[in-house]
Image (cartoon, rainbow, N blue to C red; front, side):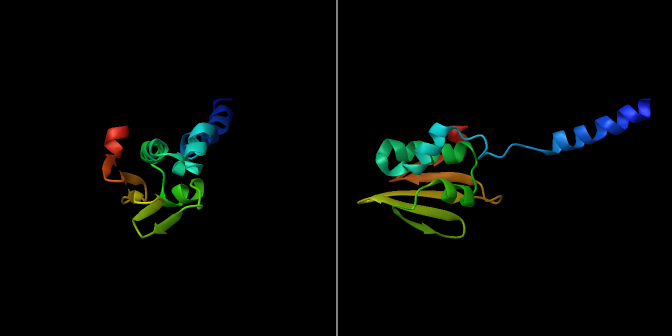
Length: 115
């Protein structure tokens, strides 16, 4: 009887522990909307930067959730968004391709700040 219980519980433990929720799955609808409309105002841009850093989004995730209505340049370890005249938002990605820092028109923001 104990063997049957162990055989039934073991897969649950393995798969239950192995499955981790990705940062994107944890984005709220409001956060997704901010990322999609980041260019609405300077405050929205900063809020979008903080979401990316707090959720440790990857470059691909940032590109997926942000709108491409505004010009953006994608480089190996960064993305730069040009959302208004003389207004720039850049986000830098680290070793695991996760957002580690951001600059919103001269204001630096780090992941440690937003956590």
